[in-house]
Each structure stands twice: as structure tokens, then as C-alpha cells.
Image (cartoon, rainbow, N blue to C red; front, side, top):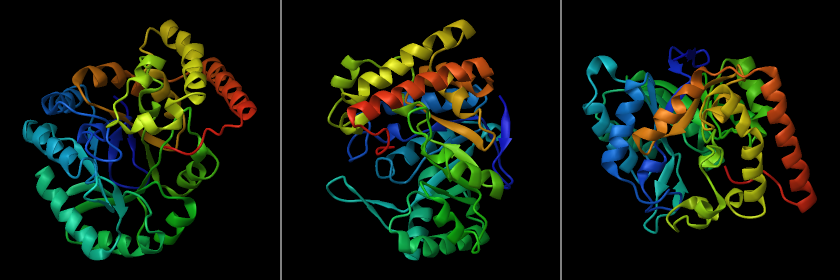
Length: 334
């Protein structure tokens, strides 16, 4: 599989990364429903066997549950094949399953130490501020991460869900290695400002939700959306309910022939699409079971033709026109 350097950092990542948001389970406000832990571990191992060289997780995913599963998988992978591990800090689980932001120095240090224990590693390859919340504390968290890097507990530091102005505030303290934003055919906000900025400043981009939480895989249907569990946060996401749901599924059916003609799975098409941008280092794909990564991993090596890109652009333009007629916006939820 192709590898791309993560901005100006020392890390080289495969164009597909293993995402572990969903394996954190459903017992919190942004969960994905119940998870089979055994399948998750096998899925992670399968991704590594297929050539994926990095895993993305976060302390908040299931209040540490995702990191625990990643740690178990790492212990089953030979040392010589160990993947790069990225995780995040700054989100604290409340008793009712909701999430609160905290970027105080003591909290960041405490979270890092807990992540190291759960993952079973001596050093986190990429540590990221999960959200700039509260905004006024991002410099304090960033300075704490710089200290952790100097202590050898972190290899590179980056941010997730930050804007250009926020990254500019952090750069004088320490270079920002990477940005992790949501990016997909159905969420293109970063194309206007963050992608050009990252390209100019040498900040790597690892995008999450490139398949829009499953909507763009070709396997999603209206019936499946209606059957989503209350434990699955997608049941509350406007993109998964009418009228947006119908328009989103219409896009999939319009571009599906491109995948069929190329002899590939539909799920690989949205990955190839985000990777068309030179600023994007890698696309993170959720892995809840081995069959998912087996289906998606090929998207990391698919280079779309201009004709294919034009078909996709036409379908997305039509969707935006219909959304405007309905008074809807495609932005909002990530």
C-alpha cells in the first residue's frame, strides 16, 4: 500500500488508517451501538496483515474501551509488525455518558499516562488534542503535550477538529504535525481553508469519516437507517434522516457504476476521492470486524481519472442544489 509522509513530521503513514471510534461501544453519547470485542481485535489484526501501518483511537471512545481493545490487539501482533499508534486527549466522560472538554495541563498529563497504560506502549506515536474545547485552553494543553514529547512519552503532536486560526495560535509554541478533520463527499468544509493552509504549512491531514459513517459504503439503506439503535449516535444525525438521507443515498446510486466499472467495491470510491487531494496523508476507515477492512483497504491505491471525478462532482453539485431547494444545509454534524 502507498505511504505518504505526515506533513513535515518523521511519520510515514499508509493511505488507509484503522479507525476505532465505533469499537468503543454504545454506552456514551457518541457511541455506535454494541460491539463484539473479539471481532474488533481480529479486525485490527487483519488490517495490519493487509498492510495498514497505523491505528487511530482516542481516550474518550467508550471511556477508554477502544484503547483497551487496541492494546489487546497490539499484544497479539509481532513486534516487527507493530503499527503506528495515534490517540487523543481533551474529552472527559461524565457519569451520564455525555462528554465535557478539558484541556488543563494536569488533565492532559493524566490522560496521556492512562492512554499509555491502556495501549501497553512506552511512547504514543501521534498525540492529538481531540477538540479545541474550551478554546481558551488550547495553548495550555499544547504546552503540556510539548513537555510530554520532551519526556519521550510522545513522538509527534497534532490536533483534531481545529480551525486555521487555532492552529496559528499553536505554531509558535511547537509545530503542528497534523490535523484530523472530518472530510468526505458529504462534508467538504475543509477544502476552503484548512486543506490549503495545511499544504502551505507542512501540516499532515488524516481525515476521519471519509465514508460519512457508512453512508457512502454502498451498503446503507433507508431501512438500515430506520433500524439504528438508540445507542448509535447516527440515529440522531440529520444526514441519516429525511430529507438528507434520501439525497445522500441518491448520490451513492449515481456514482456506484464508477466502482462497478473499475471492478472495485463501492466503499473504496469515497476513500480514493478524499485521497485525490495531495494535502491528505491518509483516510481513516472504521474497523468493527475483519470484513470491513478487507472491503475498504484497496481504496488507498485507487487513483481516480478526471472523468470519474467529473461524474462525482456532478452528483454532489446536484445534491447541493436539492438541499438548497429544501432549505437544508449539508453542514453541521461531522
